[in-house]
Length: 126
Image (cartoon, rainbow, N blue to C red; front, side, top):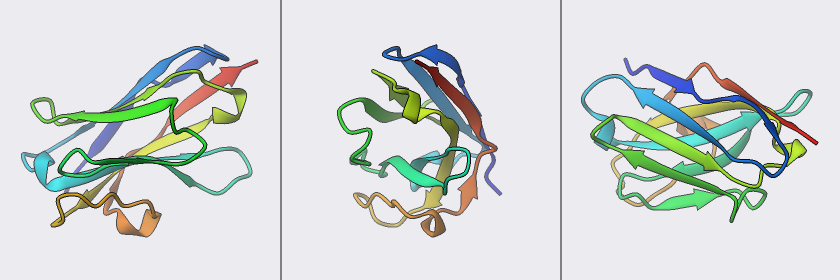
C-alpha cells in the first residue's frame, strides 16, 4: 500500500506563486507515474498535470505555461509549482500515483491512478 501526503496549500493573492508537495511512502517511487488533480466547489475533479517515470510531463490547457510539475526521487516527492495563480485556480488539489510499466506515458484520467492523497486546499484571492 502506498500512502501519499500532500502539503503546501494555503491562501495566496492572484498573480502569486505557490508550491505543492506530495511525498510517497515506500521504496518504489521511481516505478510510479504521478498526477495532480483538483476539485473546485460544485465541480467535478479535473486533471491538472502529470509526470511519467521518464519525467515526461503533460498539462491541462488551463494551467499550461503557469504550472510545472517535477519529481525528486531522492525524497520520494513530486511537486507542483504554480505561478501566476488566478482565482479560478481555487480548489482542493490532490496528488495521485499510478503503478506504471510505460516510461513515457502520462495518465490524465482519474481511473488510471491507483493511489490518492487526502488533498490540500488552495485559495486564490482576487
